[in-house]
Length: 209
Image: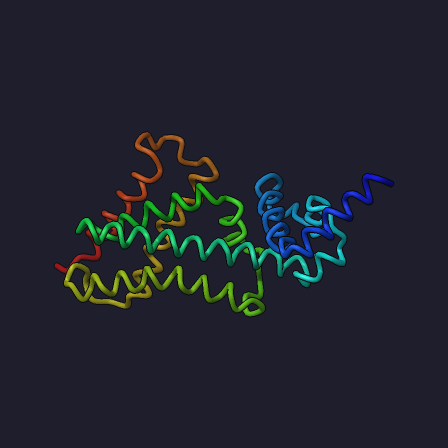
């Protein structure tokens, strides 16, 4: 009885301090990392944080809503990582697309729970969460804008920048996903180097003749 009371107090204290929502997201990320998204349940999140389902539902309507929050946070982090790569490469007058490729696979390796939630097909109705759509669009659009800028500078051939961005994204995503599944054991130079090489080869194919 004492343990149950202590747990209830911990949950109540977190809620009143405004930390419960953050704690729930952190617990979800930890559980996904340990057991995968398929094993993730609201009950397991509530148990880890030490709060009732009633307290949990004050912040998230259902499992999909909490997963959407994790994915939204992931896309926000990805956008920040890509923006930083663009800024760093530009300041050094280096190629931007290879820098973004390295940043992409690095993000996937550093944020496996977010990455799995973002791209695992577990969220079927993205329209339920405007923040998720906004952060996902921002992460993709920074790649589109970069390619459009390279086109304006005459470094990449004319074409739909969205289609070219989708091709580049697919290459980076494929390398990151295969690496996370440990299907690239023969890559002696490292996954980031492989992603940079792939981006350079793709960029060469997109150059104006």
